[in-house]
Image 1 (spheres, rainbow, N blue to C red):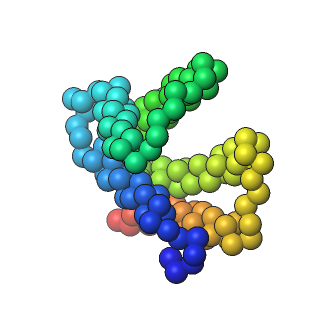
Image 2: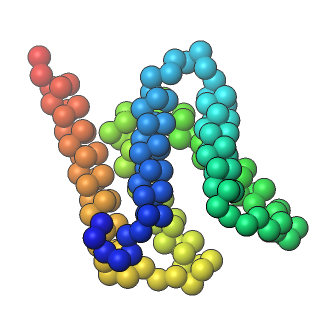
Length: 153
């Protein structure tokens, strides 16, 4: 955060991470009487409403039909992602599930290279490595703690 690359828009990324964390924690607390499908739909709706707020700052141009079809397809995949994240957070151990969220880093790099021709620089790769290492360390630590609890009388 002191770099010229860190702008007010960077705060949106941090805000997104904070909301994602709150969503995960809330998902764990909501009982099984609320269906996973409903929670996924509410998550998608919340993101849609939050994104709609940005329309005040953007000029909307109707995309061509091919782009709309691609967006519709992407929406299906995003909704499926919400569904499976809710299921994982409900059924799995948070310490084990959370590090899998870091796989999005690899997908983002792949999409950046294939779709946009983008290549991450050394600092970006180093930052991603630190984040991934911290997640893996946390998963390993949680696993060891579970093992110790099981072994204790």
